[in-house]
Amino acid sequence: MTATYQTAVYASQPESSRGRLVSEPLSPTRTPFQRDRDRIIHSAAFRRLQFKTQVFVFHEGDHYRTRLTHTIEVAQVARSIARVLGLDLDLSEAIALAHDLGHSPFGHAGERALDQVMRDFGGFDHNAQSLRIVSRLERRYAAFDGLNLTWEALEGIVKHNGPLRDDAGNPAGEYEGRAIPGAITEFDELFSLRLETYASLEAQTAAVSDDIAYNAHDVDDGLRAGLFTLDDIAAEVPLIAGIVKSVDAEYPGLDHHRRIHETFRLLITRAIEDVLNEAGRRLARTRPGDAEAIRSAGMPHVVFSPEFSENLAVLRRFLFTRMYRHPRVTATMDKAAGIVRDLFASLLEDPAQMPEEWRAGVDGMDETRLARRIADYIAGMTDRYAIAEHRRLFDHTPKLR
Image (cartoon, rainbow, N blue to C red; front, side):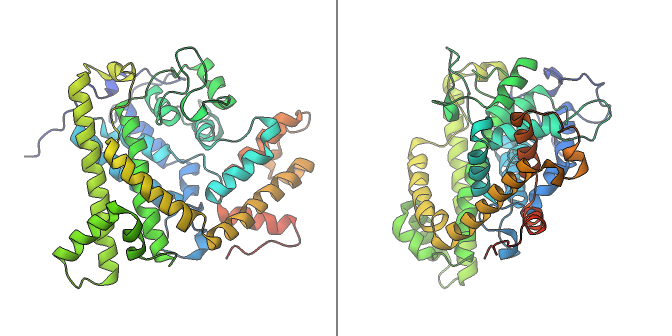
């Protein structure tokens, strides 16, 4: 017989959920967190991730990660960590699956371009956009806009990287020194997400799983693209050097592709093991009695050890200089950012160029509301749809190669 999975006392308990903004009857067959996961998977925003850039634009090759494949990998890592820690697997997976829903086309280059053109209208932030999607922009259900996710899922989407306010009410964490996006503060007034506290362990698990997945798999994509070699990384990143050495010792003469796969399979394994060991140390020290104790603990629990964090910092510096700032990548992303800026300027000048469902009600909108409507429309585009729309509206569209 298969043993029944039991959650730890500090896990989020679906039967104790704080509920949804719009009350719904409980499902007789699924927990609230399972319904969250299923709604995310069935959303249009989730499907569009298939043709949104991770690092390489979709038509550069079939084997590079997209936002969708990255998201699936994050969810797999999150479930692996959550299972060992005794967390709610469905909530961990739901937050992982939703964490990138708000990304615009063309990866971070598209996000920076949208933020630039939206600077006078409240800016653009993919985390806030994820909240807009699940709370407002998805329109599938008769009784509400958005997906009407549980409080715990929404909290995880917004706060998976930590508190957004300090105890004095000032922006903190990733928003320190700047304003928290209006989409977050406005929703928080409607359905408080307690922006000053840490999120659940399930949310923290999704956040660290994102770090694990993109660090390992961005390198894999960079190797596939020929931007550097495995020996190049090993020469500059001690963490990788140690793993490569162990792979070569155990499998001498291993072919090139398997050598790469073994290296990054072991990198993911070691990263997960480090997180589990560090989480175990922190949980043993704080001894939280329930999920609420995690929120008020004043520190995260599911994180890398200081030593592993330092090793990852070296790897990230390598990726920044040898991949993200590689001339081939930056040249493509500069052209992609130009497409986003062109689309925004053209649509702001003539909103009638948008599809009917997006231009409905724009007459009489002030410029700020109109700009946000256009940003929502562009942010939801896939890479290929953005390129197609640019070709429709402009005489020349750059080739992203």
